[in-house]
Image 1 (cartoon, rainbow, N blue to C red):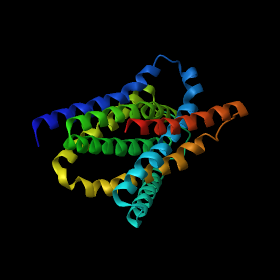
Image 2: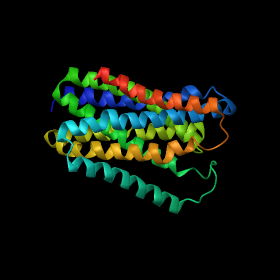
Image 3: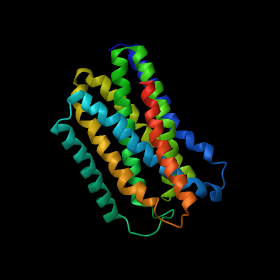
Length: 251
């Protein structure tokens, strides 16, 4: 493995990691104004997670392995794993409303899913640089465009779940650094990466489906909403999906 590939790969994942700081641009908003848009960010994030799972991750898994039982089992394991982790978190944490001391469990599930997603990004970026430098650069650009809307949505989810804006940015950046671990692993394993990715891609998709369907979308039905706000939430949900569709043209 050449030093050039290592250098390009490490620089690329750090660029992707710093995209998680996009939430800093919301710091200029007051808490009152931020709360007005939080549920719309949650809607967008749910759409992005579902879009990513069904438009990017699952087609990639099927392309690698065909629509086999192995893919189905990996998806189910991703869903079940997310359920078990959330059940464990609910057992540990009390069922109090969101506050600075008591966060909703979907916050931790989102962080876990985001860490897994960023780890997968690192794996994919490393693998692409193994193919060639141009392919690696193109993949990095696609991942950056993919991360911008998702990180904005993730930031909204964390704040909505009880994190302060500063902590939301910090933890978002912390989970983004798992992409560094992913790219290092992919470069070290090189030829063995395909077997690991074949399982991890549908597994991550299952986790995203669980987070969006079980945690985020139910949050949209809480509180007092009129028909116009509900329509805007639906628009944001579709917008998250459409962004994932648009990214197909960058691949």
